[in-house]
Length: 221
Ligand SMILES: Nc1ncnc2c1ncn2[C@@H]1O[C@H](COP(=O)(O)OP(=O)(O)OP(=O)(O)O)[C@@H](O)[C@H]1O
Image 1 (tube, rainbow, N blue to C red):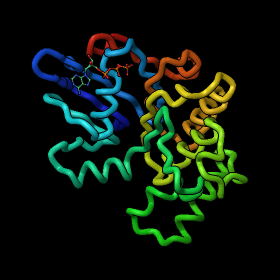
Image 2: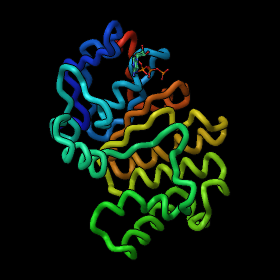
Image 3: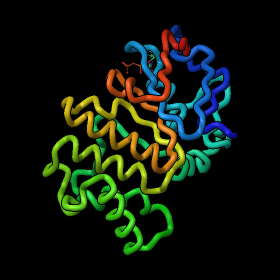
């Protein structure tokens, strides 16, 4: 089976002296729910940015869903971010002037669906994340947990095989975190979506199929 994520010999240097990634190798199989842990400065965000096509490695190769990422090809990177990957962030990154439903539908603006089709899909996803009754609310009118659910629905709208999450429970209280983790796990089980989640939250680690630890720019376990 082609892995969801395949990283070979990836180096990322910040001259003159920082080696943020030092020959990282990593394979995540399709359908896995993986926690990426490690101390501050160990290279987690750098790796996530490279996987997401936001930063490029100095050396090495990255494959997402069987396609080698071509960091020199801007169109390929845009397609990767729109179709192959979903993103969930610590601070939700919702657009404040758009309603929940408009936020969820937003990524489809750049595809070819009509407005009706976009709204229909967004509405279905809001139902899936338990927010059918919040479709017309603005981010400022929602709790942190609700905003994160909206962001999760947005990450799903193009039905990507892989979701990258950066501290998705970092701004939530414990009870709300538990609900968000359960939602991510449910999506993983029901849709087979692969998750790679950078986290300091032991509850995410406990729920994961596997925990990958980084230390000083290397994967150690
Ligand atoms: N733009 C940059 N310029 C120079 N050094 C950088 C830059 N970005 C990151 N680094 C360095 O690269 C190393 C890895 O940083 P990175 O942000 O990937 O770590 P992290 O594990 O995500 O940390 P945290 O848990 O605090 O987010 C650190 O030593 C950091 O100081």
